[in-house]
Image (cartoon, rainbow, N blue to C red; front, side, top):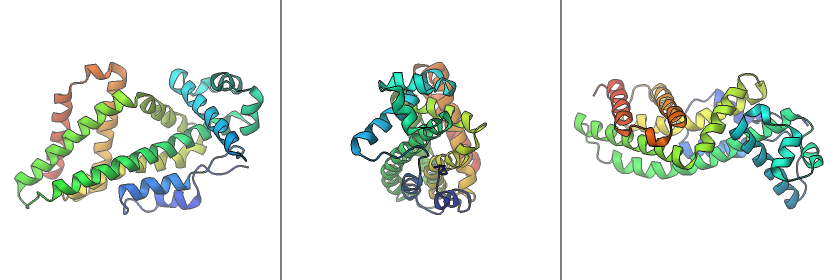
Length: 250
């Protein structure tokens, strides 16, 4: 079978309806909409083997890049017979696409939980807004601080995820089958930042969220290159605050 990586319903929500839903709703919708292209597992045990193969492919991608994904290499990494990988994935393109499909599905589940927790924090912060510049500045400062904390946590606890994300985006440049997945993943990342700027009464919260997300991703990339121990948290905080102050006229 040759399914799309995202169903028509999921694709429509990504491309036609920018950001009306909550972050959690969007993340959950992505989890429910992803579809795999390889052979479906018929039993629980075989589904676990299939997931193990995808996990092995992802480990290879993180260590050696997408071009390292070959049936024999993945079978060795997963410690399964070569026939197991060719049974579930008739060709390498299906294996690569499904590896990134699983990546997006898991990322959506993680971000949905994260945004759910952050939503409560944001609500508590917005209760302190009284319409003054000072209260908006205080909220902007706290969002910047939370962003730096998030970046450091990503680099310390989810480094492989960040490396996989960059490999995913790079592969999508030459693999049209990944385009809808990239759009879905990008929307998940934007959703939480959009909520922050909505709380700050930004005139263009989605546009501001796009730039904010790009800044965060740039800082994550720098942390991947230099190591988290080399990150200058004070400098990162200053840059994020400056951006939000400029956007919000603070």
